Length: 459
Image (cartoon, rainbow, N blue to C red; front, side):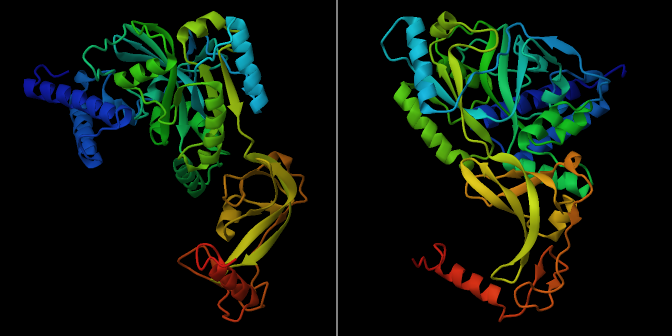
């Protein structure tokens, strides 16, 4: 340890930490940034360099911990002071109306109850514990009573406040606050992550939730720091000094303290509004940058929540209204090749028909030859298929354990399946093309494109 450290260095490190925490708060919680991303990155680099030069000035509250710390040998167990319960599921409007009837019956009232409706994030539930405004512990939900401590990993997530802020002076920072959130990976982040896994010859993640769970359980937090994790907060456990009697008002208080809440929450609505918002949310679910698999409905009054209580596994004041599934497992019966309007050859898997999200699916794109080879997709494979909105169904991964040796490797044809011309692989791209301008498949696809809605919109 240095015998003497320039007071200006100490002051600079302190100021950098405070400013970086403040800018994180403004950017993620309040959506009101004051500096550019490049300026933020310059400040972070300066802090990391100063801390590396003066390790005796290290702090568990430093925003530099977002780059990760030394690996741990195993995860420790953490007991939740308030159980992290799972939710009962509903699958129809009648289920939700029955839920509302049960709530009003338990309360002994015919009056309308106000609810808050939230997108049900398809991620991993975690609990963060703050003491005097500082993050001290983060853990997984586990079995609801105990979870695994993942504090170093959670600190790498930029949307997690390491120290709490006050947007309003009258908002006192609680002495102890247990806040619950959902860790997710956006669809774009998931795509980039799987591209990186493919390039390194590593197994692909099946979906963003699976990727988020695997990222949080890394023993080396530096690996977690490289994963595109985000978090949205949705509730609290124990909260000393956060005495608010409305769920929505409590979420707003959390936002003021620096926690990111979902911008698509619909507060304080009656049961008819709940059903209307479910339909709206289901329509726009694919417009969101991350996956949601339903909507969570909670009584807005904290007093009512306390009166209704809970069963051994779930609260009586909340329910999850699930969307139809978008992923299913099926089998590849054959692989054919389509020729597009530009002559590009695209392999298409013919599947055993499977219902995904209310639609029968029997085909899925393989995109190109390289993609099919990287995923090692073969005729006869059992695969996980995904359909999202109007996107053509695609194969997410092969279920290797289901192979029996009869599967056949797919190879792209050397000649166009429509006109028989020799096809050419573009060395700069992954595409294989037919360059015959008289190719019947190309001409048909060009006519279809000409008449399509995005072109001349001909009925």
